[in-house]
Length: 175
Image (cartoon, rainbow, N blue to C red; front, side):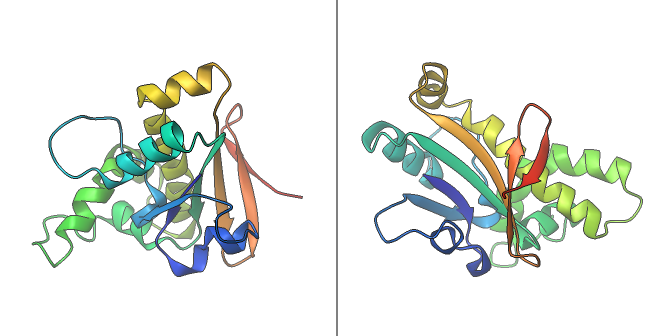
């Protein structure tokens, strides 16, 4: 299973060279996985996670971030903060999951440059992995070895895939 961004430049089927039916994919702005919650409402990503993990019994789940991500840039800059519906409110609400990351990055970067944006993309993958682990059915399966979680980042400009080494907290290029 792959959680990926809706951006057409980061198509998981192309990146992983798969045929239709080989991977179960959910795509959204910034490839975010929300934290577990059971409030009333529409939970599209959570429903896809539940289906993939409990019904399809996927054995691996990849959060796939990418370079030049507009959703991560919007989170970092706050571009849509305070926007009305249709003017960016839904985007701002969705990427608000990244607010703690944004605040931390802003403290360490005096300019919101390409490096700050790249770090936001990496941190979004890490946050999504942490959020995935708040789902009881994911945590249970990861603990007993039925499910493995992975973080990845596709550098569009390089055409190169990087995998997250969670122990070190860094991304390394795939050979």
